[in-house]
Amino acid sequence: MKALYRSDTGEDLSLVRDGFNVVQPATILEFFKNLSEQRGFKMHTAGTLMGGKVFWALAETGLSATIYNDEHVVNQYALLSTSADRSLSTVGRYTVIEAICNNTLQLPHSDL
Image 1: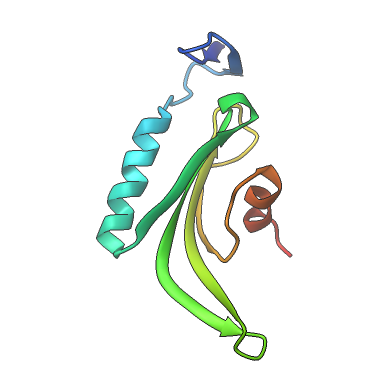
Image 2: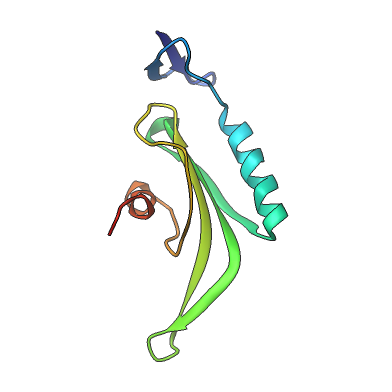
């Protein structure tokens, strides 16, 4: 087993097996940025939760729909999220939910 920890604070993130592939958040963000640019998306926001254990990025796809008597615009986003503590698999998907906290990050991962 290996301990993953934050290099800036020294805080523990998780224990992982020797074969675990450690990928830095900057590497994942760069991958998502490149993918977004290839698809014509615009990076919207990115962040971490749970003390850096969960990280995510959101990009605007440029697609939207007007609903409810043409009064509300719903925008589509591309979401990429993963975790260092194994609480969340690496997932990329489309969503209409702007991920800004753990609750809104979990919604696109649930089967509503």
